[in-house]
Length: 362
Ligand SMILES: Cc1cc2nc3c(=O)[nH]c(=O)nc-3n(C[C@H](O)[C@H](O)[C@H](O)COP(=O)(O)OP(=O)(O)OC[C@H]3O[C@@H](n4cnc5c(N)ncnc54)[C@H](O)[C@@H]3O)c2cc1C
Ligand code: FES
Image (tube, rainbow, N blue to C red; front, side, top):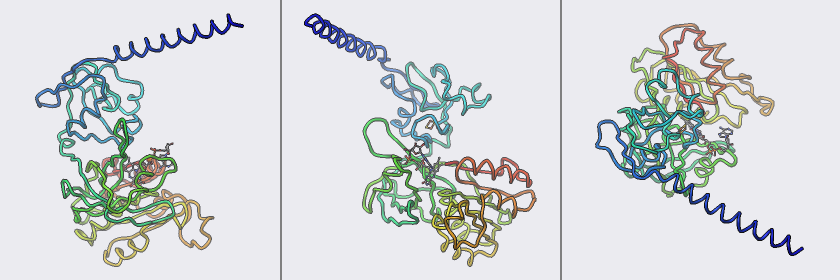
């Protein structure tokens, strides 16, 4: 028996020594030393190698969109790597088209700095800022969704266009975690922004934003997003939102009420049940003030709302039924990928060109 015990002790010691050696080797191998990072025409900076490009850019106050928080699943964090980026990872391929691959476009969250690197960041992204802010109001919208009003303090104002979004920093140790949230207030209020946040059980970002209270400090970056409202007052706008995809529509319609109250605009909102519909009263009030604004709802799970007398089914079916075939219009869609895909298909069959259909998927 004592022979067995001795063997176990020896094996234990050997195992311990081996793990210590592996840990040491790992540290040595991962020690890339100081690396030079050249961003656009700026003077190169020297950083300790081994970090993610996305994090290094953040440290340089360059706030690349990173809606999935660096998990490599959103494809938003694209930058052009001129040299020193290493091989493209299989995780990046689904997000990069042929021309991007040829230009050296990479996902900044997947690129580790292991040698001197030169990159090019779009000028528009260099304008994105980091904001310190405080929660100034909290309102429950549905059983799982709350609206947060956030007062900006440093800088005190944000210039944004309706339809854009911000990224909220989720406090914690280790790598920074961001989550994207559409701004639901109009740009006329530039000192406060409103967000609509649905609680995802176990979700880090939404749980954090469902716990914050009035007075709590929040850090966010923005604004992000490429939706540009056609300024021609006669250009008809079709907005389609599913679930929390209502948030940017709330910003767009309130902005139109202030700036172009006669612009033709139709809003389609999809929800699972009647209890999931948000801002119904607000939109009815806006309709009274906007002569060419129409709103249509559809419930995908009407069985749970026996009193519902409105449309039933998926929102793309209602779009199919009501939107006429006419060129020259603009569309903004926001909601889950399946909804975006289905609505885009319907709109393209009604003379919408791809470049006139903007969307945010989540
Ligand atoms: C441009 C953009 C704008 C957005 N705007 C809004 C907004 O206005 N309001 C809003 O609430 N969200 C919005 N989102 C989604 C938001 O960024 C987060 O993805 C969402 O809050 C979930 O993050 P989390 O950290 O709570 O969950 P995570 O920690 O990321 O995920 C936890 C678990 O839940 C799953 N999960 C994640 N999202 C969902 C989902 N929607 N449904 C079911 N399961 C899910 C994940 O797969 C994972 O298993 C937006 C996203 C983008 C890209
Ligand atoms: S893919 Fe989402 S942050 Fe990089």
